[in-house]
Amino acid sequence: MKKIITLLILAVGVTGCQTAGTPTLHANISSSPIYHEKYYPDGSGPFPAVIALHTSGGFKTVKHLIQRYVDDGFAVYAPDFFKRHGLTPRTRMETFSTYRENIEEELTEIVDLMKNDPKINKKNVFAVGFSNGGFWVAYLTGSSKVNAGVSHYGVWKANMGREFTNPYPMRYFSKSSSPILALHGEEDGTQRMEFVEEAWDEVKDRGGRLETHVYSDADHAWDKKNSTRWEYNEEVDKDSHKRTIEFFRKNIK
Image 1 (cartoon, rainbow, N blue to C red):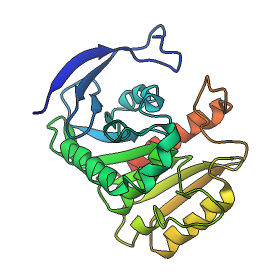
Image 2 (tube, rainbow, N blue to C red; image 1 turned 60 degrees about the vertical axis):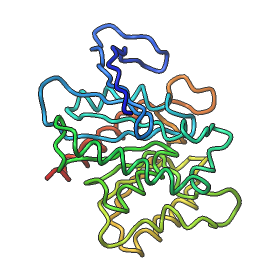
Image 3 (spheres, helix red, strand yellow; image 1 turned 180 degrees about the vertical axis):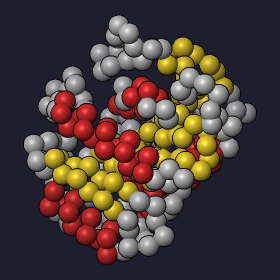
C-alpha cells in the first residue's frame, strides 16, 4: 500500500543548515514504487518537472541541489535507486550490471508517476543526473521516457578496467532517442575524457541526439562544497546549472 507522509524539510546546503532568506521546501515522501521525495514550486501548477538522480554517494548527494530547480519553476521528483537493493558506494558498480534492469523499471515507474501527477505538465518531464545518476539520464533519454536530460559529470564507462566491456549506457541510444546534454570536466579523474569521448562517439554513431560541453578546469563532482575528495568549482557549478535550465526550456513542448 502506498504511504505518503507530508513533512517540512529545510532547504539545505551541504552543511545541512538552513541559510538566511532561503525558503522552506515542502516534501511529499513515498516508498512506492521506490523511495522518492516530491517538491513543488508555489502555486497550483501544472509545472514542468525534473527527475533528479543522485551520485554513487547515495540519495543525500542530490538533496542540496533540489531547491535551485524549484526556484526555476520545476517540480522535482528525487528517487533513491540504491535503497531497495541495499546498494552503497562500495557496491555502486552493481547498479550498471546486477541491478540495471531493476533500476530501469523502477525509474520508469517514477516517470509514469510524474506524468500522472495533476500538479505536473505531463508533456514536459525532464531528467538531470550527477555521476552515477548521469548513467540513468542516458537511460531515460535514450529510451525517450523524458523530453530531454542533462548529465553532470556522468558515468559513461560503466565498468572497471581499461576496456569498455559494458555496452551501456551507449546501447540505450538510437535515432528516436530524446536529446541529452552531457557536461563534463576535462580534469575528471573518475570518468576520464578518453573514455567519455569514446562513449560519446558511439552515442552519435547510433543516432543519439547528444550535445556536449567540456569544462577545461573542472574535475568530477564540481558541485560538492565540503568534499574532502573533490574541489568545489563555483563558476562551473553555476554555469552547469544555467546550461541545464536552458536545455530544458529549449525542449519544452
